[in-house]
Amino acid sequence: KVSIHSIWLGNNITPLREEEWGEDEEDENDVPVPSSPPTSPINTRKHRAGVDIHSCSQFLLELYSQWILPSNPSKRTPVILISEVVRSPLFPKPVGLHGVVMTQVEDLALGLDKAVAEPVSRLLESTLRSTHMPSRIGALHGILYILECDLLDETAKQLIPIISEYLLSNLRGVAHCVNIHNQQHILVMCAAAFYLMENYPLDVGPEFSAGIIQMCGVIVSGSDESTPSIIYHCVLRGLERLLLSEQLSRLDSESLVKLSVDRVNVQSPHRAMAALGLMLTCMYTGKEKISPSRATDANPGAPDSESVIVAMERVSVLFDRIRKGFPFEARVVARILPQFLDDFFPPQDVMNKVIGEFLSNQQPYPQFMATVVYKVVFQTLHSTGQSSMVRDWVMLSLSNFTQRTPVAMAMWSLSCFFVSASTSQWISAMYP
Image 1 (spheres, rainbow, N blue to C red):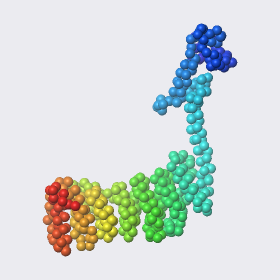
Image 2 (cartoon, rainbow, N blue to C red):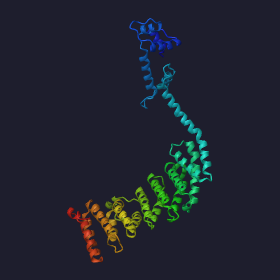
Image 3 (tube, rainbow, N blue to C red):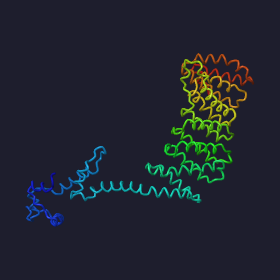
Image 4 (cartoon, one colour):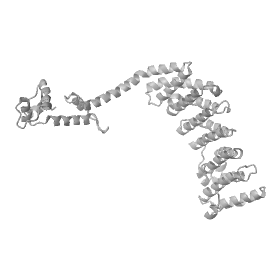
């Protein structure tokens, strides 16, 4: 080990006494630098040694700062070197102390978190049992804030069972009568439940998830009067997020598919369109999806498989919504339907359904169905090189077009169909 005393001896420097350090600094600040060699014993020793104390100390401070506060986290300074730096007389400077202070603050913060975890958990538990509703709402907001942090295992084991029990019991009690309960309380309970299921699935367990899904189904299945719109949309958006996070079991996902299909058929257009988003999310997350490559499968029995039949039932709900819904609903469904059909079915499986809906006398929006026919025929069949199939469908469907009444509608429908089936870009460009 090289000490500062050995450096002094090697350079013929007489060590200064403690009281001389202060006198030295005062002499440097008050007395101008003489042009001739100094006569003071202290300055004589400095001059004889030829050492610039200020430059050396500044260099050491910068070096110590690099060791204590490394810019690259991968290059960690050895602990023994840091300990020697701390013992140095130059270390008690603001730059040197910064690293030590920050380390102590981090350790202190972790210690405080552990120290207050248990009292905070007890406080939240007692507040959740309070009869004062604003206090319970505030406790739920605090719980959400805590859950968004990276909880320690001990804290999670202590806090999450309390929260899950509270959410299950309270949501079960208000699911059938949401309209007479505090709306803000229900919203924050739903937010906490969805957050637990998404980020702490192992801590809450499958029973909690199944119970919350069941309560959500009861809430959204209520009438317009019993379930406010804001809660209805909040629950649906939360269920969509859970599906996208892939934290639900297959059984829970299937129950959500049935729930969404049932909700798409409600009379309220706003609630039906919100449920349509949940239905599409269910199918696109892979639970009900059928690969478009089925069109090239060698197995001719593939279109009759159970999965195709189940998916076709879901599609029938969309066609029913176009036929029975308001104009803006039909426009929305017709806009997403072609891409949806292309993602889930080979064209030959849906052409009969699409053409049948287009020619139906009970179809109040043939202009929207004409757009679906055009996109399915032109963008799917022609783009995949299946023009021969288009010609076959034209020949098979001509009799159905000619039988439609009135004659003007038959001519209009046939014109739209011919334009859709044409391979000429000029004729296709005439389509509105």
